[in-house]
Image (cartoon, rainbow, N blue to C red):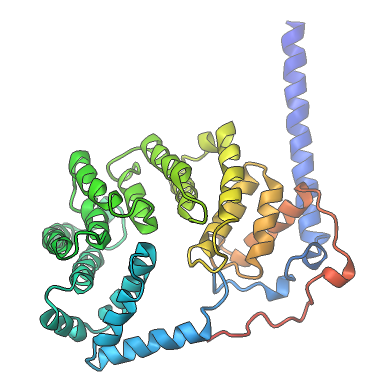
Amino acid sequence: MIRLLIILLAFAAYLVYRFLRRRNHLRWAREGFDPAAYGLPPRERLDPTRSGPPTPLEQRERSQAIADAAWAGDWRPAAAYVAEAGDHWDERWSRLGLLAAVAAEGDGWLTAWRAAEPGDCDAATLEAKLMVHRAWEVRGSGYRHEVGDDAINSFVELLPAAIEAARRAALLDPANPGPWVVVVTAARGAQFTPEQFQEAWDELVKRAWYHYDGHWQAMQYWCAKWFGSNDRMMAFAEQAMDAAPPGSPLGGIYLHALAELEERRSIAGALAADRTKWRIDNLAAQLRQVRPDDERMPQLRHLLAHFAGEVESYEVALEQFRAIGPWCGADPWRKQDDPVAAFDLARALAVKRAKAEPLAAELRPEKNADVRHGRP
């Protein structure tokens, strides 16, 4: 009995200690935190409109020129833009994403492209991708109980045609994984069985095992709100992380899986597991090898900073906050009532709990530096 009482008193003392420590840290974060002293942009420079720095001007100008040419009826610059990516399949898919956005504003040029080059896999894949996008627009993004029956019926009717179009596109270039990314994307809406999904997935990965967006779509299929479970989704995400080659952001799928758990309020068990901290630390090492200008890195850095803080890998969190800079327009901060305050508090706690030392004055960011340089 006495031993049990001692254990209970020790546990109560630990809880009191944790409470007092958190209260002191929060007070310091709000009243004593000087971001610049730790290599972080001052609060007044925080920008909640972006997740990362603006796209380089030259790239923006080229994208606009491609869009303008397409809307004027000339599809050739768009075709050349995609073909330029060669067999860098992630890049090729990203460029198709730009063209899909252009086509969503007017697709007469795509119709002309398909007519002029009926054997072009990129044009056929883009057409199928656009069909899936329009089906999802009809459905909306709500959960099933939030979507009307008419919208669901239209959605279900539109997807088979998109999948068939993607399968026809796959015949035009057997090496191109793009059509299979379309099928994998449509699979959950089309209510593929796990067996049907696995067949499509096998076709994708034998062409491009490390396809980032393909993995993101597959993670969605295996999550609990579709055709899997929390455990199935996490196993898939862990497999992706373990298989990611050096320099690939593929391991970031693990962070998206954690975000899915958090969205469903099912993350407590994952954060308590020792293996989660181990994976977060290892993922930080993986992502250090990815090109800093990779378009997926800003969002991944925000998620990594957040989850590193949650599992008490505060040095990793601080490293990410320093790399992020002033940009805080990303999840999880933008889900808060005040994204800037949420971001600022998280980085302050990372500094405090990492026991970081202030930088020498000459190494600190200038308070009046213009971070908006290059903004379109």
